[in-house]
Image (cartoon, rainbow, N blue to C red; front, side):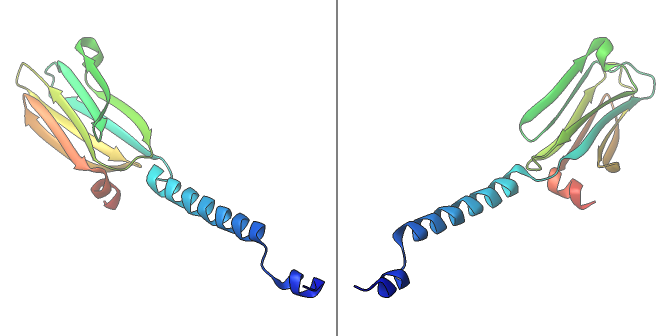
Amino acid sequence: MSEIESARRPRTAVWIATAVAVVLAVAAVVYVLMAGGDPHKVTFEIASSGEKVSSITYGAGEKQLGKDVGNAAATPWSKSADLTDDSGDLWLRALSPAGGAITCTIWVDDRVVIEATTLSGADCVIPFDDALDR
């Protein structure tokens, strides 16, 4: 085989390197999509009509981000988190044994996405995807 014919034939190493580069590029795109991209600032807030709040729990998806009880649950109460995983629900729950009005509010990127006021306890739950659409 002449040198010209040899130079025109595809090289196995070149094909393997190209295939590896394509696989790595696809893996990087999948990772970015699965990670949720840029973080969203989520703020959880509780206010009451003056009644003591005994327990506050909040989270995203199946993960509880925190729980405050006793003096740590004094109102007005607020906690924030930067979240990149936007799967599942955002949720916030507060209990008051005295039965007063409690308002829960969840903010995403400085926008109120859900707010509820009830007696004896408050429960705010919204799918993260829906919160991003508001």
